[in-house]
Length: 138
Ligand code: GCU
Ligand code: CA
Image (cartoon, rainbow, N blue to C red; front, side, top):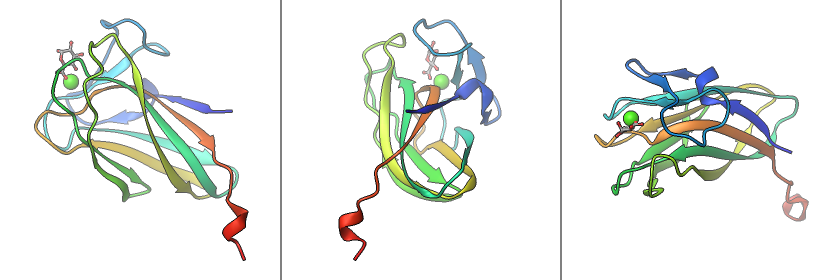
């Protein structure tokens, strides 16, 4: 099962606000970052064991333009310039899902806007351990 990390409990770049004006969010709000390159939300995810994980970012993009993100895991961009399309409305929340290898102990997961459009509104990060493909181990 997934462990949920709310965006409002994470760290976020200067000028961001925790907002509640678009319904349907998880927790006590979502993070609205300034619309510019470099706007970011960063979570710290502690794992008992190293291994592959599914990262699902709850978000909304009520514009018609993509909002592209770099996803960095402990400082290394593992998903580059991922286009986050319109979700149709600011109240329509969707997940962006990637997989990443996490280490035991603390991992930083950072979503950073790569264009002047900025980031989508970010609601949470769900982390789920992924099955290891042992067929390739030998
Ligand atoms: C609107 C919307 C915000 C959103 C912003 C944006 O102001 O209400 O929630 O963050 O647009 O364009 O990023
Ligand atoms: Ca915004």
